[in-house]
Image 1: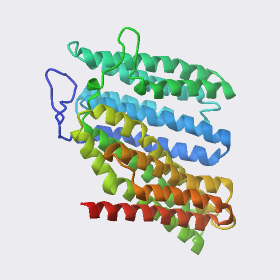
Image 2: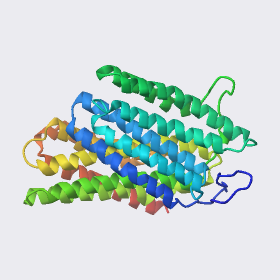
Image 3: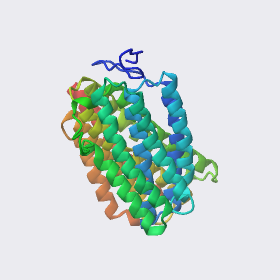
Length: 391
């Protein structure tokens, strides 16, 4: 629950088996990332080459990381208090600069992207450090550890922003490597050592809901792309079927994630004695491929809607099959982390998508989209029936 804690100033009071609601300030902050996700999908659509995909992957990893780190901090701090709200509003400004820089981040606006990203990561962590009362030594040490790691990565972000072409890419890959390794390395720094698992306790229900809302953001972006593209086209039978297939596919993805998985994850992490460890694995790392798969599927939706007939080219095959494939890989690993076993339905779905890829070039984009949607429906129905039978 969220409370005014005289011993923790701006900190939440974390109570086992209680679920703090997501605040309106957090939801308002998330609006910036609706725009960021749209920018990422459009960047991939317009730069769908091998090097373009690498560039977009770097940008997406940055967007996800700055959002999920903010979710961690607002899990500990109380967003109902004015200073924390002002932090989120300042982060929104940085997020808008970050998002608007995405299309040309590897061209003219690289330095803007780097400055916005580094300022958000370092500034938010510095705020957390200064908001922590002196007597909360373990929390302050954690904040210092994270601030050190993010400050080191910020140097590489800025150097990349100042560099050009391949040098920029390598600087930014190094920056991401530092940041993505840091939680697994428990933010070790000289003098302070490793962070303890006990120090990372989170309000599990709140963390689960925050990440579920980001999945909604990604699904919402897919629906927006689908609707906006369809509205601009002549409504032929092929386009209508492609539109329906895309929408049903998004619904199936929602069903696969939310019908059983999201609720089970929230319940499990709320009861876990090691909520921090589970949040790091299941929500910080394993939600990344879930969101990435949805974004890639949104790219497929636009490609198929615009060109439903003929043979599927490589862009269409990679996005139409790759999106659901990455999504199912993410969900099967997420549910393994929270349930302790692999979902057979998801495994079969993954195998069917891989089998479909063997002859995808001989299938039209429209029917390739219909086939992947049917596979997602199969996974959703299978899981619902099998888990319903177990209950």
